[in-house]
Length: 106
Image 1 (cartoon, helix red, strand yellow):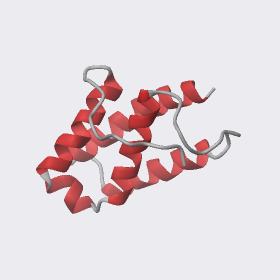
Image 2 (tube, rainbow, N blue to C red):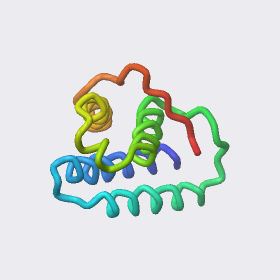
Image 3 (cartoon, rainbow, N blue to C red):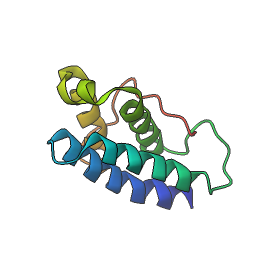
Image 4 (cartoon, rainbow, N blue to C red):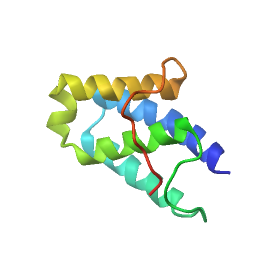
């Protein structure tokens, strides 16, 4: 069940973040998507902690990064954007698992 959730939400996350990075989605809309996703996740009766797969680990890492950094940093910090793009590529299935990607379940 959690694998299906991560698969579906990863696709949606890629869509939302890609639009945000291109300036086609307001940060507030991205923030709402993230919190809606967290609310949906809370409906599962799963333990917090280690994710079940690399994809889930990258998913939670990216979700954390998007909430941790302010919008201006997400938009203008080239190193951060590269890191986010690496996560997006992995979630799309077109890249390798990013290094130093530490994601845990909420």
